[in-house]
Length: 287
Image 1 (cartoon, one colour):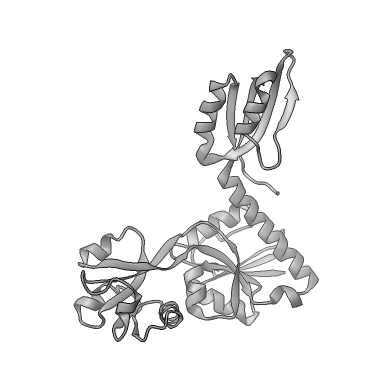
Image 2 (cartoon, one colour):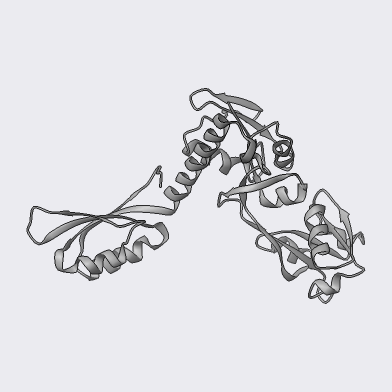
């Protein structure tokens, strides 16, 4: 049975559960449940603190897990990212009082407060910067006001909380994070064949969800003489399906198109004479 770690709370928990449900896996009904078994898919889910997931996976006690890229890097665990999942995106940056610093070189000799000591210490070392790192569990923006640090490093979304604290971001982003699937480093080389098969099936299912969320199916009718122009607008993933209609000189076309571009593509198709243009959601796929 495949053993998978899933975030039990926080911004990763809800979207991870939704994606797993879309992928056909049974999920917990109550937030208090810490473990469930999905006998149909032969999977056992463990609901753990997001910060601990990479550590559990690296120990080999669990086969794979879903956590944040930032949490994976910060943990220092012997685990690796094997699939980005496209949700819970965030940017990790330095911030300080205006005029304090403008780049990495200005951090030498300063103290940086953060909840992600592993990420920050590694980033400073990679850039040859000698600075002190203070670990705080949260609300790091208050560290400067209270004199604990001169600079903070934290997740920045809109920047509102930083501005309210009189701080501004500076320099290049430390890293960009999102939810990812992680696995013990090198696990695929020595995994049991049955486990490896289930891991690959799990990844294919999640990739299918990602594609289904990104694309829609588009159907339309067009004149044969306009087919090449229409196909250029809707090339599909490999090539569109084209079928003759009962009315001579007309064909029906079906292709997957990016959901974000669907309205523009429909306009362009209409302009070249296509009609009966429809889009439908894709709930699952395998590519």
